[in-house]
Image 1 (cartoon, rainbow, N blue to C red):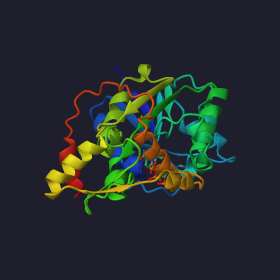
Image 2 (cartoon, rainbow, N blue to C red; image 1 turned 90 degrees about the horizontal axis):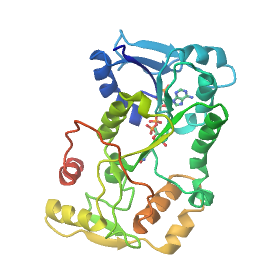
Image 3 (cartoon, rainbow, N blue to C red; image 1 turned 45 degrees about the vertical axis):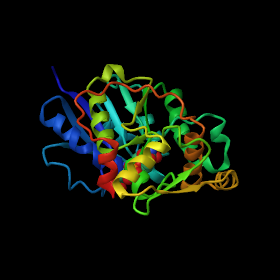
Image 4 (cartoon, helix red, strand yellow; image 1 turned 90 degrees about the vertical axis):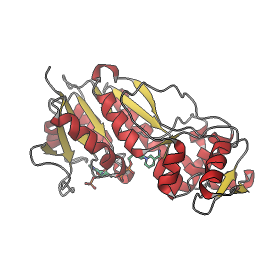
Length: 291
Ligand SMILES: NC(=O)c1ccc[n+]([C@@H]2O[C@H](COP(=O)([O-])OP(=O)(O)OC[C@H]3O[C@@H](n4cnc5c(N)ncnc54)[C@H](OP(=O)(O)O)[C@@H]3O)[C@@H](O)[C@H]2O)c1
Protein backbone atom coordinates (compact mmCIF):
# COMPACT_ATOMS: atom_id res chain seq x y z
CA UNK A 1 0.00 0.00 0.00
CA UNK A 2 1.25 3.49 -0.85
CA UNK A 3 2.31 5.46 2.22
CA UNK A 4 -0.16 8.05 3.56
CA UNK A 5 1.08 11.52 2.68
CA UNK A 6 1.15 13.46 5.96
CA UNK A 7 1.98 17.16 6.25
CA UNK A 8 3.19 18.38 9.63
CA UNK A 9 3.51 22.00 10.71
CA UNK A 10 4.68 23.07 14.16
CA UNK A 11 7.27 20.31 14.60
CA UNK A 12 9.58 22.46 16.75
CA UNK A 13 7.00 23.29 19.44
CA UNK A 14 6.12 21.55 22.70
CA UNK A 15 3.53 19.21 21.17
CA UNK A 16 5.44 19.09 17.87
CA UNK A 17 8.69 17.85 19.42
CA UNK A 18 6.82 15.09 21.25
CA UNK A 19 5.08 13.96 18.06
CA UNK A 20 7.96 14.18 15.61
CA UNK A 21 9.83 10.99 16.68
CA UNK A 22 6.70 8.86 16.23
CA UNK A 23 5.96 10.32 12.80
CA UNK A 24 9.58 9.83 11.73
CA UNK A 25 9.36 6.21 12.85
CA UNK A 26 6.30 5.62 10.64
CA UNK A 27 7.97 7.48 7.78
CA UNK A 28 10.99 5.21 8.08
CA UNK A 29 8.73 2.14 8.18
CA UNK A 30 7.11 3.30 4.93
CA UNK A 31 3.64 3.64 6.48
CA UNK A 32 3.55 7.41 5.89
CA UNK A 33 5.39 9.88 3.72
CA UNK A 34 6.12 12.77 6.03
CA UNK A 35 6.25 16.30 4.62
CA UNK A 36 7.42 19.00 7.02
CA UNK A 37 5.76 22.37 6.51
CA UNK A 38 7.63 25.22 8.11
CA UNK A 39 8.11 28.93 7.87
CA UNK A 40 11.25 30.53 6.52
CA UNK A 41 13.89 30.37 9.24
CA UNK A 42 12.28 27.62 11.37
CA UNK A 43 14.63 25.32 13.28
CA UNK A 44 14.85 22.14 11.19
CA UNK A 45 17.82 20.60 12.99
CA UNK A 46 15.72 17.64 14.22
CA UNK A 47 14.44 16.83 10.73
CA UNK A 48 16.47 14.24 8.82
CA UNK A 49 17.83 15.44 5.50
CA UNK A 50 15.87 12.90 3.45
CA UNK A 51 12.48 14.10 4.78
CA UNK A 52 10.71 16.47 2.37
CA UNK A 53 10.35 20.06 3.56
CA UNK A 54 8.10 22.78 2.18
CA UNK A 55 7.90 26.44 3.16
CA UNK A 56 4.61 28.07 4.19
CA UNK A 57 3.87 31.72 4.80
CA UNK A 58 0.72 32.00 6.87
CA UNK A 59 -0.41 35.50 5.98
CA UNK A 60 -2.17 37.43 3.21
CA UNK A 61 0.85 37.13 0.90
CA UNK A 62 1.43 33.40 1.15
CA UNK A 63 -1.50 31.93 -0.75
CA UNK A 64 0.41 30.60 -3.78
CA UNK A 65 3.21 29.17 -1.66
CA UNK A 66 0.77 27.60 0.80
CA UNK A 67 -1.26 26.02 -1.98
CA UNK A 68 1.93 24.39 -3.31
CA UNK A 69 2.92 23.29 0.20
CA UNK A 70 -0.31 21.35 0.80
CA UNK A 71 -0.34 19.74 -2.66
CA UNK A 72 -1.04 16.00 -2.43
CA UNK A 73 -1.40 15.88 1.36
CA UNK A 74 -3.88 13.32 2.69
CA UNK A 75 -3.59 14.46 6.29
CA UNK A 76 -2.29 17.77 7.59
CA UNK A 77 -1.34 17.88 11.27
CA UNK A 78 -0.84 21.29 12.85
CA UNK A 79 0.68 21.70 16.29
CA UNK A 80 1.18 25.42 15.84
CA UNK A 81 1.13 27.33 19.11
CA UNK A 82 0.64 30.79 20.54
CA UNK A 83 0.25 33.71 18.22
CA UNK A 84 0.38 31.40 15.21
CA UNK A 85 -2.87 29.59 16.02
CA UNK A 86 -5.06 32.10 14.21
CA UNK A 87 -2.80 31.97 11.15
CA UNK A 88 -4.06 28.43 10.52
CA UNK A 89 -6.92 30.07 8.63
CA UNK A 90 -4.40 30.46 5.80
CA UNK A 91 -3.78 26.71 5.87
CA UNK A 92 -7.54 26.20 5.61
CA UNK A 93 -7.62 28.53 2.61
CA UNK A 94 -4.82 26.57 0.97
CA UNK A 95 -6.61 23.26 1.62
CA UNK A 96 -9.91 24.43 0.14
CA UNK A 97 -10.93 22.15 -2.72
CA UNK A 98 -8.06 19.67 -2.14
CA UNK A 99 -8.75 16.43 -3.97
CA UNK A 100 -6.43 14.39 -1.72
CA UNK A 101 -7.12 15.69 1.79
CA UNK A 102 -8.92 13.34 4.17
CA UNK A 103 -8.60 15.63 7.18
CA UNK A 104 -6.87 18.62 8.71
CA UNK A 105 -5.97 17.94 12.35
CA UNK A 106 -5.86 21.53 13.51
CA UNK A 107 -4.01 22.68 16.61
CA UNK A 108 -6.69 22.08 19.22
CA UNK A 109 -5.16 19.90 21.96
CA UNK A 110 -7.40 21.59 24.51
CA UNK A 111 -10.38 20.46 26.49
CA UNK A 112 -14.13 20.37 25.64
CA UNK A 113 -15.41 23.87 26.25
CA UNK A 114 -19.11 24.68 26.23
CA UNK A 115 -20.44 27.84 24.56
CA UNK A 116 -21.47 29.06 28.02
CA UNK A 117 -17.97 28.56 29.45
CA UNK A 118 -16.48 30.46 26.53
CA UNK A 119 -18.61 33.49 27.41
CA UNK A 120 -16.18 34.17 30.30
CA UNK A 121 -14.07 37.23 29.38
CA UNK A 122 -10.89 35.44 30.41
CA UNK A 123 -11.40 32.65 27.89
CA UNK A 124 -11.47 34.92 24.84
CA UNK A 125 -8.03 33.61 23.80
CA UNK A 126 -9.47 30.14 23.32
CA UNK A 127 -12.09 31.49 20.94
CA UNK A 128 -9.34 32.02 18.35
CA UNK A 129 -9.42 28.27 17.75
CA UNK A 130 -13.12 28.59 16.94
CA UNK A 131 -12.31 31.08 14.20
CA UNK A 132 -10.14 28.44 12.52
CA UNK A 133 -12.94 25.88 12.86
CA UNK A 134 -15.48 28.33 11.43
CA UNK A 135 -13.25 29.09 8.43
CA UNK A 136 -12.88 25.34 7.78
CA UNK A 137 -16.64 24.89 7.89
CA UNK A 138 -17.09 27.75 5.43
CA UNK A 139 -14.46 26.33 3.08
CA UNK A 140 -15.70 22.74 3.50
CA UNK A 141 -12.33 21.53 4.72
CA UNK A 142 -12.76 18.39 6.85
CA UNK A 143 -11.36 18.77 10.36
CA UNK A 144 -10.28 16.50 13.20
CA UNK A 145 -10.32 17.87 16.76
CA UNK A 146 -7.95 16.26 19.24
CA UNK A 147 -9.05 17.04 22.79
CA UNK A 148 -6.64 16.39 25.61
CA UNK A 149 -6.36 16.77 29.31
CA UNK A 150 -3.88 19.09 30.97
CA UNK A 151 -0.41 18.31 29.62
CA UNK A 152 1.63 16.41 32.22
CA UNK A 153 4.42 18.97 32.15
CA UNK A 154 1.93 21.76 32.95
CA UNK A 155 0.27 19.77 35.70
CA UNK A 156 3.51 18.73 37.42
CA UNK A 157 6.05 21.45 36.64
CA UNK A 158 3.83 24.53 36.47
CA UNK A 159 1.38 23.50 39.22
CA UNK A 160 -1.49 23.95 36.80
CA UNK A 161 -4.28 22.77 39.08
CA UNK A 162 -2.73 24.03 42.30
CA UNK A 163 -0.91 20.78 42.99
CA UNK A 164 2.76 21.22 43.88
CA UNK A 165 4.28 17.78 44.09
CA UNK A 166 7.69 19.00 45.26
CA UNK A 167 6.25 21.07 48.11
CA UNK A 168 3.73 18.28 48.74
CA UNK A 169 0.64 20.47 48.40
CA UNK A 170 -2.73 19.59 46.85
CA UNK A 171 -5.29 22.30 46.20
CA UNK A 172 -8.98 21.41 46.47
CA UNK A 173 -11.84 23.17 44.68
CA UNK A 174 -15.48 22.12 45.02
CA UNK A 175 -15.58 18.30 44.71
CA UNK A 176 -12.17 17.80 43.10
CA UNK A 177 -11.26 15.15 45.68
CA UNK A 178 -13.81 12.75 44.26
CA UNK A 179 -13.66 13.67 40.57
CA UNK A 180 -10.93 12.99 38.01
CA UNK A 181 -8.83 15.49 36.07
CA UNK A 182 -7.75 14.33 32.61
CA UNK A 183 -3.97 14.54 32.19
CA UNK A 184 -2.15 13.84 28.94
CA UNK A 185 1.51 12.91 28.93
CA UNK A 186 3.14 14.54 25.93
CA UNK A 187 4.75 11.29 24.81
CA UNK A 188 1.35 9.56 24.79
CA UNK A 189 -0.13 12.47 22.84
CA UNK A 190 2.58 12.15 20.18
CA UNK A 191 2.19 8.38 19.97
CA UNK A 192 -1.61 8.47 19.93
CA UNK A 193 -1.82 11.22 17.31
CA UNK A 194 0.51 9.24 15.06
CA UNK A 195 -1.56 6.07 15.51
CA UNK A 196 -4.74 7.97 14.67
CA UNK A 197 -3.14 9.36 11.51
CA UNK A 198 -2.46 5.80 10.32
CA UNK A 199 -6.23 5.41 9.81
CA UNK A 200 -6.98 8.58 7.83
CA UNK A 201 -10.44 7.49 6.66
CA UNK A 202 -11.55 7.56 10.32
CA UNK A 203 -10.41 11.11 10.96
CA UNK A 204 -12.80 13.54 9.27
CA UNK A 205 -15.29 15.38 11.47
CA UNK A 206 -14.22 13.54 14.61
CA UNK A 207 -13.69 14.91 18.09
CA UNK A 208 -11.17 12.55 19.66
CA UNK A 209 -10.40 12.46 23.37
CA UNK A 210 -6.72 11.72 23.92
CA UNK A 211 -5.51 11.50 27.51
CA UNK A 212 -3.84 8.74 29.46
CA UNK A 213 -4.60 9.60 33.10
CA UNK A 214 -7.69 10.66 35.00
CA UNK A 215 -6.77 10.76 38.71
CA UNK A 216 -9.19 12.06 41.34
CA UNK A 217 -7.93 14.57 43.88
CA UNK A 218 -7.93 11.79 46.47
CA UNK A 219 -5.85 9.53 44.21
CA UNK A 220 -3.33 12.35 43.80
CA UNK A 221 -3.18 12.72 47.59
CA UNK A 222 -2.63 8.96 47.97
CA UNK A 223 0.19 8.90 45.42
CA UNK A 224 1.92 11.91 46.99
CA UNK A 225 1.54 10.43 50.47
CA UNK A 226 3.32 7.31 49.26
CA UNK A 227 6.04 9.08 47.27
CA UNK A 228 6.76 11.88 49.75
CA UNK A 229 6.40 9.72 52.83
CA UNK A 230 3.74 11.96 54.39
CA UNK A 231 0.29 13.28 53.55
CA UNK A 232 0.31 16.46 51.44
CA UNK A 233 -0.86 19.78 52.80
CA UNK A 234 -4.38 20.56 51.53
CA UNK A 235 -5.15 24.11 50.43
CA UNK A 236 -8.48 25.46 49.22
CA UNK A 237 -9.21 27.51 46.12
CA UNK A 238 -12.17 29.81 46.74
CA UNK A 239 -15.17 30.76 44.62
CA UNK A 240 -14.00 34.41 44.92
CA UNK A 241 -10.55 33.57 43.53
CA UNK A 242 -12.19 31.59 40.73
CA UNK A 243 -14.59 34.40 39.74
CA UNK A 244 -11.77 36.97 39.80
CA UNK A 245 -9.31 34.92 37.74
CA UNK A 246 -11.94 34.16 35.14
CA UNK A 247 -12.15 37.85 34.20
CA UNK A 248 -8.68 38.46 32.77
CA UNK A 249 -7.74 36.83 29.44
CA UNK A 250 -4.69 34.59 29.79
CA UNK A 251 -3.42 31.37 31.27
CA UNK A 252 -4.77 32.23 34.76
CA UNK A 253 -8.33 32.25 33.44
CA UNK A 254 -7.86 28.96 31.58
CA UNK A 255 -6.46 27.34 34.72
CA UNK A 256 -9.36 28.71 36.79
CA UNK A 257 -11.85 27.28 34.30
CA UNK A 258 -10.07 23.89 34.36
CA UNK A 259 -10.26 23.86 38.16
CA UNK A 260 -14.01 24.49 37.94
CA UNK A 261 -14.44 21.70 35.41
CA UNK A 262 -12.54 19.34 37.69
CA UNK A 263 -14.40 20.33 40.83
CA UNK A 264 -17.79 20.01 39.14
CA UNK A 265 -17.02 16.93 37.02
CA UNK A 266 -17.74 18.92 33.89
CA UNK A 267 -15.09 17.90 31.36
CA UNK A 268 -17.70 16.82 28.83
CA UNK A 269 -17.45 13.83 26.48
CA UNK A 270 -14.76 11.44 27.64
CA UNK A 271 -14.99 8.33 25.48
CA UNK A 272 -11.54 7.67 24.08
CA UNK A 273 -10.51 6.00 20.79
CA UNK A 274 -8.58 2.77 21.23
CA UNK A 275 -4.85 3.37 20.85
CA UNK A 276 -2.99 0.11 20.22
CA UNK A 277 0.48 -0.67 21.45
CA UNK A 278 1.05 2.10 24.00
CA UNK A 279 3.32 0.95 26.81
CA UNK A 280 2.74 3.72 29.27
CA UNK A 281 3.57 4.08 32.92
CA UNK A 282 1.28 4.23 35.94
CA UNK A 283 0.22 7.58 37.41
CA UNK A 284 2.52 6.90 40.35
CA UNK A 285 5.49 6.31 38.02
CA UNK A 286 4.66 9.44 36.04
CA UNK A 287 4.43 11.52 39.24
CA UNK A 288 7.73 10.07 40.46
CA UNK A 289 9.42 11.05 37.20
CA UNK A 290 8.56 14.70 37.93
CA UNK A 291 9.62 14.73 41.59
N1 LIG B 1 -3.85 20.98 27.09
C1 LIG B 1 -2.80 21.67 27.53
O1 LIG B 1 -2.41 21.58 28.72
C2 LIG B 1 -2.04 22.55 26.57
C3 LIG B 1 -0.89 23.20 27.02
C4 LIG B 1 -0.15 23.95 26.11
C5 LIG B 1 -0.57 24.05 24.78
N2 LIG B 1 -1.70 23.44 24.38
C6 LIG B 1 -2.15 23.54 22.97
O2 LIG B 1 -1.27 22.75 22.17
C7 LIG B 1 -1.10 23.34 20.88
C8 LIG B 1 0.38 23.49 20.58
O3 LIG B 1 0.97 24.33 21.54
P1 LIG B 1 2.53 24.31 21.85
O4 LIG B 1 2.69 24.83 23.24
O5 LIG B 1 3.12 23.00 21.46
O6 LIG B 1 3.03 25.44 20.84
P2 LIG B 1 4.49 26.04 20.70
O7 LIG B 1 5.47 25.30 21.52
O8 LIG B 1 4.38 27.52 20.87
O9 LIG B 1 4.74 25.69 19.15
C9 LIG B 1 5.24 26.54 18.28
C10 LIG B 1 5.35 25.85 16.90
O10 LIG B 1 4.39 26.48 16.05
C11 LIG B 1 5.09 27.00 14.92
N3 LIG B 1 4.48 28.26 14.47
C12 LIG B 1 4.08 29.29 15.25
N4 LIG B 1 3.58 30.28 14.47
C13 LIG B 1 3.68 29.84 13.19
C14 LIG B 1 3.33 30.39 11.93
N5 LIG B 1 2.78 31.61 11.83
N6 LIG B 1 3.59 29.67 10.83
C15 LIG B 1 4.14 28.44 10.89
N7 LIG B 1 4.48 27.86 12.06
C16 LIG B 1 4.26 28.55 13.19
C17 LIG B 1 6.52 27.25 15.41
O11 LIG B 1 7.37 27.32 14.30
P3 LIG B 1 8.83 27.95 14.36
O12 LIG B 1 9.73 26.78 14.60
O13 LIG B 1 8.98 28.58 13.03
O14 LIG B 1 8.85 28.96 15.48
C18 LIG B 1 6.72 26.03 16.30
O15 LIG B 1 7.08 24.89 15.55
C19 LIG B 1 -1.87 24.67 20.93
O16 LIG B 1 -3.11 24.50 20.31
C20 LIG B 1 -2.03 24.94 22.40
O17 LIG B 1 -3.19 25.71 22.71
C21 LIG B 1 -2.44 22.68 25.25
